Image (cartoon, rainbow, N blue to C red; front, top):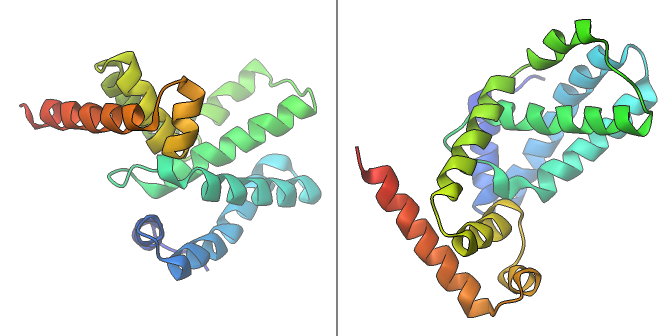
Length: 177
């Protein structure tokens, strides 16, 4: 059962809005997509593929706050999956032939994922370091305000104010032609 990009994106959006049933449906729908993705790349290493499916599902759940609703969902998903594949290669100390680099870089959604990352990094770079860190910690890394405050060595209200002012500045920047 291959779900469409629109359906996956809808489930993800509903999940971000707190719909537990949509989140469960999303994770169930991702299993066959991820199995196929990993099996094609691992050439029969089914145990590794299943492990990577589970690791990717956990990462999707844990990092769902980093998903940009205006971007394709599958680009974001496959970026996470590629990172899990790279982690496996590092654990196994595998090397990649220079001839294989093109096939790795041309996987589904690679350019979209890189572009989205560059857009976010560029926008955050336009803020003060404190605002950028507060937004990155709370909105991209999924930290609570208390965790972000503790990590930065500042008060919770300072994190809240930094996030508010930073988002306000980004909104103003994006509204300008």
